[in-house]
Amino acid sequence: MSEIEIKRLTKKFQVNGDVINALTNVNLTIEKGDIYGIIGMSGAGKSTLVRTINYLEKPTEGEVLIDGINLGELSEKELRKKRSEIGMIFQGFNLLEQKTVLDNICFPLEITGTKKHAARERARELLKTVNLEEKEKAYPSQLSGGQKQRVAIARALATNPKILLCDEATSALDPQTTDSILSLLKEINEKLGITIVVITHQMSVVTDICSKVAIIDNGHLVEEGEVEKVFASPKSDAARELISGKLIRYSPVAELESGRNIRIVFTENSAYEPVISNVILRANAPINILKADTRNIGGKAIGEMILGLPEDEKIQEEIIDYLKDRGLIVTEVNEGV
Image (cartoon, rainbow, N blue to C red; front, side, top):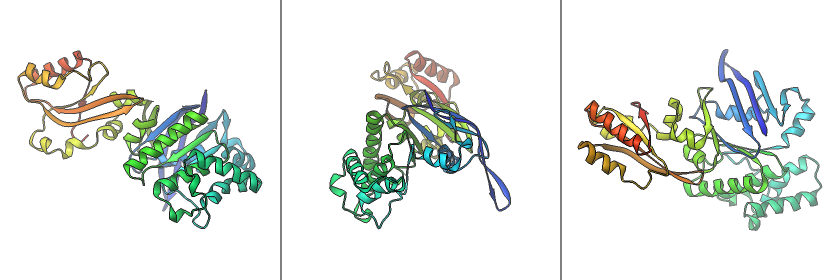
């Protein structure tokens, strides 16, 4: 069942008399219960896109439907009610510094007219959910970054939303804290069935918890699909850069050797075979390993390597054919990707 449908969405801004196209003809469907990643580099338009989902930014053209309801056709009162079904957390936490942790979580409930006792009871339940029961009387200035984000998550859940939007929610956190926040989001998704939309520029965030991903580049949706498939065989330049980075351009090996480079992805069948050693022995030629990495995607360990091939074109093709015969996914890597 589709929970979020974005149809032909375009968003334009007027800046100093110029028209800026932040988003152009974006079409996207997010199913109920998904953890869906929207990823792109800085300025790609992903944060603008997430703000159109709850109509904090109204599209210039196109439609946003939540549970089949077109947000553009709602009155302001109806829109406010619909927004209560959509929680949101931010990179900067956005906590009220003069209020305690408990009062921060109560705040959205107070706005909706919930009685104080009921609001505090709900807030304490949520503090248990985010493992911060002992911090209810603390102020934001007394918390670590990870603790602040846990409070922000609890606050976003206060009104029992069906959808949770996370706009660069882990960008200000260290890797260990990021892992704990991502684990918490996954737990919330599994226990409460909330649809989570994750906006990020970090592919590691997407591969850790998302089931599906959309790639945004310069305001355009350039690729989408299951995370495992996009990771294994990225079709767009933007996806390839987000997955593998600018490693070829800055590799000291590449500066000496501007030959043919390939990316290989290890499947479950090939993960334990010493394919690189075997292909070097078979080709009797050197192969440069420019990058090697392993990621957990959907509970599977998926490995990738960037290889610099020898100059001889015949040997190059023999190497590629051998790797494919062993069940590896092989794609070309352009210079600078």
